[in-house]
Length: 243
Figure 1: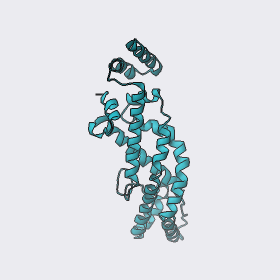
Figure 2: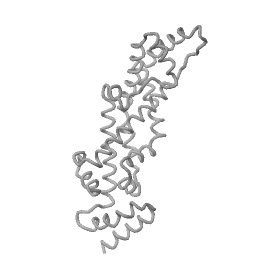
Figure 3: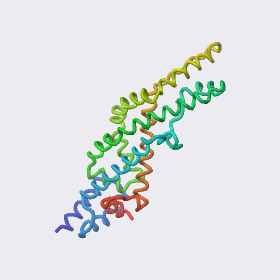
Figure 4: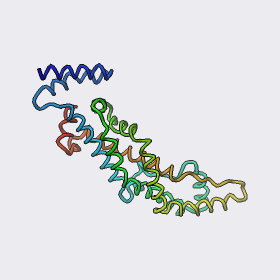
């Protein structure tokens, strides 16, 4: 009877998913569930939540360290693209140190803001459903990351912005930007150029989130492909089933 029920559940999930890859692996998964040590619905959901929690926590911890952004070339926040002409003018004028200090302050703001990311991510992870978990488990290597991004991007921007705004103040971003804008205005005074004032809080917020999701995707890939990265029993059991 238990096996019949499990196979019935599997058939319903296949019908609802509409995914050929998912349908192909479901019979094996259902067979595994029918044995004493197989995967249950609760284990699958728990495993995926655990994977996202581990990935998000590791990523935020890495990003929030001193130079977590600044010395990581993959996520380092550069001079705002819309103000690149300001950067070029300053470099041409020999003000390299001013540019370097400003860019470092942008990354310090992202590092500071990342300290607040974990609770926000964890709250979003709690809402994961069984169907979400199934799709993630059999999805591409960044399926969990994309799920988290889709579920949290709008909320994260709203909740991250005031954190970044405060970080921008405490890490001297504005203090560094003011002399940059002033120097640029002086350089372009006789050429008719106009100063560019990007929304630094918005810029740092988006770049900080981009960096965090990049790191989470890297963590997810490790959990999927490297057994050593499966640091809990539920991760070993759920992701081990994919092998």
